[in-house]
Image (cartoon, rainbow, N blue to C red; front, top):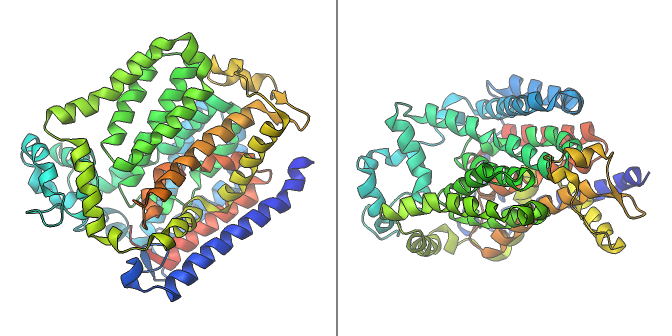
Length: 474
């Protein structure tokens, strides 16, 4: 009954989110000019362009099938089958949305514009020399300065596409296919982490929301979808390490965390999510403190390799800050973007996520009010299975389940990292793609909702409207 009575509050929260987006659109369009915000359809980078495309029928079919059958399939499918099914469904959703804009604009051409990674492939004929000289081309006034995205990221981002080219997978088509294929695994990584830390029941409930995310509009059209997947697997492997107490998972997690920091400077904020995982799995860490050794050793591999090759991460970051304020970052007003960025977050995560976050916050408030201790359960020893086999451990008179508290903590960590990025002022605009790695960890909040099909329909409609009404910049 408590959950049913929460439904009107969910709708009020969703309505408030709609008002936030409306305010961002109206204020951005009528109180600012393009020269102020440097986006065509504030708060999004794009322009008004109603259109249909070859991916339209497929996108509608995927959306309808996910809404109608997604919750049921996620509840019944064996776990080992659910993970590849989620990956396949996520790829179908991303591909169909991307192809609404056609093959060239939707997929092959995205990474080949003058701002993107494939435009500088020919400058990496000598990889060691390019790494040594990378920081010398970050500033706008430097000779042969890097295009915006190459200068704005550590070299592992560009190097990924350079290596694809070296193995014969050159060009925008292969780059787009790689980005979509790898990026779609991010939802699987989040499912693995949620199951390990909060139990299988909530992971299954979260699965359709991870698949049918509005963020898919951008996940297949920018390298940030790939970054999101790498960061997500770093967290997932850490969750497996602390619950299964495996040094191999810990080493793999550390390796991916190191790579994440060399794909995007801002993803160092994933330390917040790592801290949340270590908190939730503290029993495993206490019983096997040796896990920290392979974790830290793995985390050192990528930084040591790039440093030995001559790339100085800290120097590059400080130069990037200067470059950022030399360009659009120095023009875009912080006073608008500090809240309009959150409107972008509503658009990439959807109203279902907003309502789910309200419920997650309610779980944490009730836990605190009741003085409930989120004690470790046997689920940490078995990847979360014990937490489910108890039928849902309850704590306190209001019936707050321990696994719900644990999921709420994980989601709150993702939100905290996103808010830190927002307040930093280094993410003014274009957060519909930049914040994809953080948004991925907000989507499991949909597991708290009681009427999933209605909320999933809202998610699908939002994504379809965005992709059909706007020509997005990414």
